[in-house]
Length: 87
Image 1: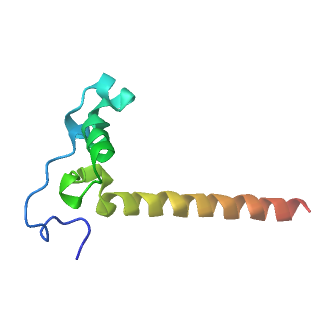
Image 2: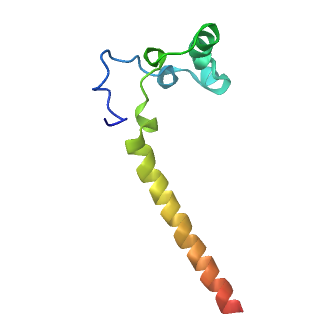
Image 3: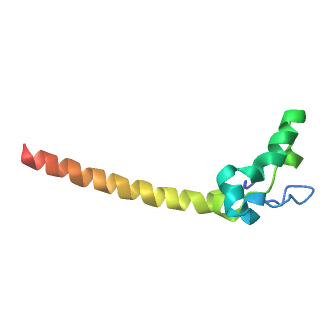
């Protein structure tokens, strides 16, 4: 099953409240209070978890990570070849 899809779930998950949280709520992580309190009272279950927001889905994160990784590799190779020229 694709971890990005919600098709395997029998019921639709609630959207992540981070998407609609205001600036103060985001910097203080106030939007997390409900799930933290629920987890304190009882073990969390899969139904308690929110749907991932689109920017956190692997289909969006992995291509960006690969791009940054490849850029850093190229940068590292260039700096290493320059060091060898100086020796």
